[in-house]
Image (cartoon, rainbow, N blue to C red; front, side, top):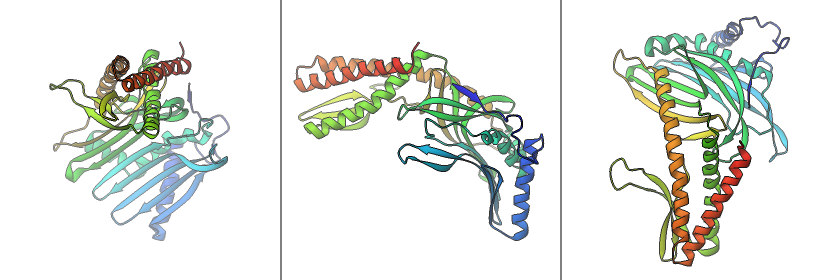
Length: 367
């Protein structure tokens, strides 16, 4: 389920013009100006209910940050906790500049986005313009960024399989639309270095793939727990390792090396190498980090880079997830056909876990 956040009629705070970006830029400029006049190195103030702006300034740099606050209810604490659920940070430094747009992980499953979160895209655009970082990105890297909207989607986490809210932002990159959960760019012109770090949402539209990802995530959690119990109860030991192919280009799989007394066996680790962070019936969110060195005059075509990443990622996820499931089934059969009763017991455990994982996936992602 995806919900686009919009500014409902009559909810705009008093004094905010139709140009929300311009209004936010003006408020941030006021914070910067007051801090500069008073000689403060740090200033922070609420510019709207639930939204604060802060300035951290030195002789060599200025950093503007906007934080979006909400009260979250955590069952573990049985109370409301006030936290930053999304933030924008833009810095202009003597040696370069940076821009961040971040949204919180591990939001409680019952959370619903506050209305003021709809201002997140305007806040990002305004922060870029206040310190002139938008112009420097365009001149230095040929990179034009504009946040256009914010959405809220419920997705499964790849680590706990809890269905949680995920805040995602529609971002135009050189005029082409992409959707990201987080985005960071840092540019050091003198060193000709760019650091990119982003979590991007890609559409796969394949329920079979979603179920396969659920099976692998469920097995990763439950197989690890089962091996720990065997280690405690029977004295077996295990470690995570990688098994390399016998010739260049052969598929490299991650494995558990399990020691059953005088025997050692390998079991495939159900772990896709592409770092999937969230997934559901239609989309995946995956993260990328890249440190890019460029030549003088070279521009970074981030839109083209993201388009290529999308194509490569979806192909890799489809292929590797299929291989992993097949390898796990083959591991279970190999162990069940072993003569040693310890191997048969381990194979029986793995087979039961695989069957259970498919049952769980069918319930979680039907159809």
